[in-house]
Length: 298
Image (cartoon, rainbow, N blue to C red; front, side, top):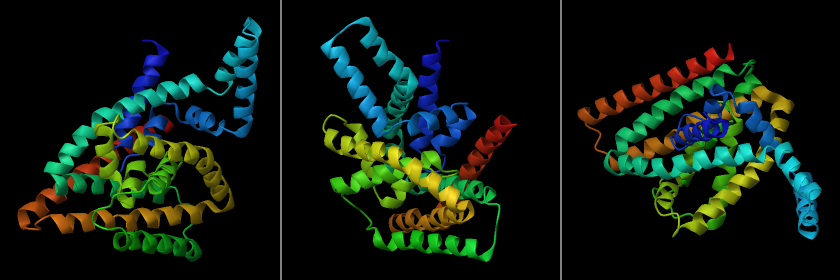
């Protein structure tokens, strides 16, 4: 099979996982063997790259000869842009296809679907914990800080929200951070911020929601450029405190979907039993993916 088709399919698989809160597309990238290439390609985005491309394209348009054309081609290879574009196309295809499926499940089986997501998130938090090497009290305090902040989001964020364009820009900026963090899903960040369902519905009709989608994607692009550098700095500064803060945020952030379920669902024995069942299914799904990742790692 053509290597670009394989990368496209890997992008589709990442997209499916990225649209479901709880499983990080970054984890899937690792399992499928493209994680380091993806991170290196994203880190390649810089002012230097923009300047190089602008110069090369201007030279080609002024003098469209073979040498100038090859300069553009070589820069494309240097920054691995065909790889990124192919991967993004696969992810985008999954977003468009899966958004309708997830929206249907949320509209018709809200509590059960959210329960499945919660199972994914609970199990994913264990992945973060397993990456923490030092459990000293000053590190744990950062976890408590993240926990309190996550819980406060359930109070701050209203039951329903119609996000403004700046809020969507910020949401995209924060959501892409999941690609660079262990055990965190970008969709879960959107769920915490209250724009998950809004963005799913926007993807149903991308033509009429083009401004919404482009604003969000600009946030994603800015986040991909800046977040990778910020996270690298924080991890180098103090990895354990950073991970504990993230762990607290993930666990505390669970209060947001719990609040939504409590507000919209009759909590009788039947519903509680089925919700617990879907939580367990979500946990098992992440354990399965984690075992695949561990096997891949060696």
